[in-house]
Length: 406
Image 1 (cartoon, rainbow, N blue to C red):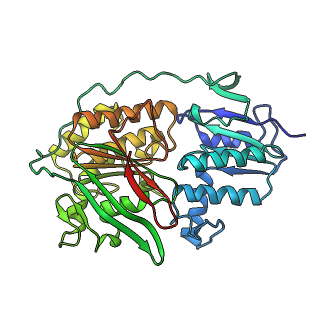
Image 2 (cartoon, one colour):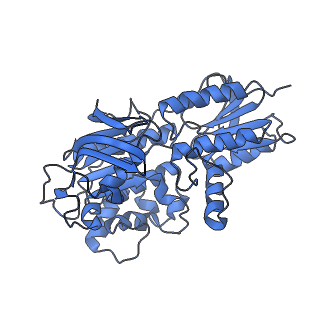
């Protein structure tokens, strides 16, 4: 007889690994201990990626035959689910299943899990209320350190907490760019495969943009063109911060104008740097602090810590923070110099409902209180939390993705 499907709604304050272990051991009055299970999670992906790095062992094959390390987040998740299904498990624990997936892929994975649910028990761990799988009726929520069955998920409302003004930059901005990023009929291809075709797009100072498009449509390609990390930019009509690409600019002439957040920054990060040092490292564009900061830089870092409510714990290890707090610190790290452009690449992946609200409050504060333009890259909209001024959408095609302003 099939064990009923069940979901566990948790916050990022909980030890997810411990919750997963308790499920596997058969706690919560559900006995999985004698069944063959599989875990669909970022935890599993990280283990496979570490195996690739250490032993060049490639157990999971992606649709484009990439290694997991080189694949996009969406490509990784699709490959992992296919790998898990091939193992014929009796139950699958799915953890934050929709992160990094576009709308079409989200719909497809729901249909896949719905079909699997007829013969395999699905156990969902979720941190966002909106992600509850439609066929799951048994819901448990942590209350007073005990999981209790509930009829519907209750989310705590978070009052505005970032009441202080945004900290000032280290130096007054004297150079004003008429245009930060300008693409004129940009086409990028690898061999015969065209990634993006005839892209025309301009980002001006202080604007708040969202970049959307399905998995594999070229969002990451456009980001690497902007950050100066893609050699394919040479020969294209691209202007970055007043500099024509290929006119003799150095990569750091570009990067000095950009604050960049991506979850990939910390993949495999194991250094025991303090929260304070992590923010200070933003002045030097490094992950970890390797130079002695100035007193002015320390003063600014402390202002950011006070804004985030982390000043009293500034000497604690960065990795001891919750996922949500780490994201706030990384945004502060990216913003200490008040760069002309702040790139947020899938910033709400892995956040719980409370963290997403606080994170969005910080981004909205940057948008309203600074001259920094924001480029927010995400498959999913945070309609009630983040409201970009403009949206640039990529539409995938076998002839290369095209783009338009919505």
